[in-house]
Image (cartoon, rainbow, N blue to C red; front, top):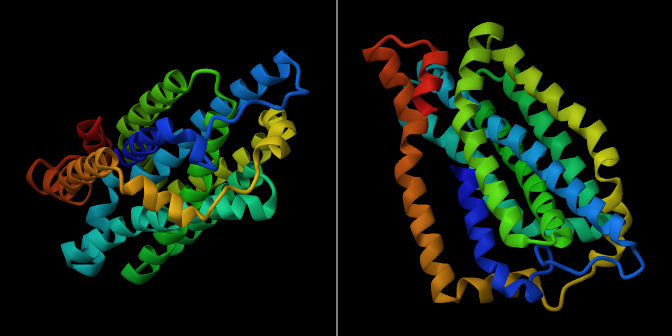
Length: 289
């Protein structure tokens, strides 16, 4: 749900794409042959689908088993909620800064790879954590990594897309499916591997993507210097102008309100099902499914 909502919020600004430095559909490099443009489009879309699927599991996979673990350790549902809230909060705060970081390093692909490494480090730290403060800190690291992956992946898709509506719709569908299966994958994996190995296994998958991405995004990397140019005005002014539009503001308010209601279940449902029905984490994951 979280990732899907972010996609919806971003897709709202498609009509203003000319003013959006990171998400704009910029024409491909004029010297690139048609086959190269098609390759860049396909590689960017495939990479976004792959990394977003894994990041969705990172974000929601623990909802089918971790609330009870945290509740037993801290004894407070509020503290459990803080642990869960730290991930999206970090993502929301860091996302507006990612375009600036991409321009500093000169490539959105580099930013994406840095994000994968940061996410993997967050999972490795989370695996060895044993108290609320440590769990919260490492979820913040994971949220930062998520922002560093999400924003450049979306930017690459929209830059090289020949049909923005089609590609955003496809990413919406992938995001929804990933958030649907994430708790089930997390619950079953936790039952089979245990808490520490589950997190380390996810970290290993992310590090594998670090190796794969430069190869799969080779065509997009070649086109990158032509599209990664400094924007007119600051990022803050762009976001301010965007949020001043009534349609955008109302849409974001509805999305935030809907998620505030639905994400209540992330922390509350698993302990309730475990207590009342005695469900194992894998079965709890199927309830989210």
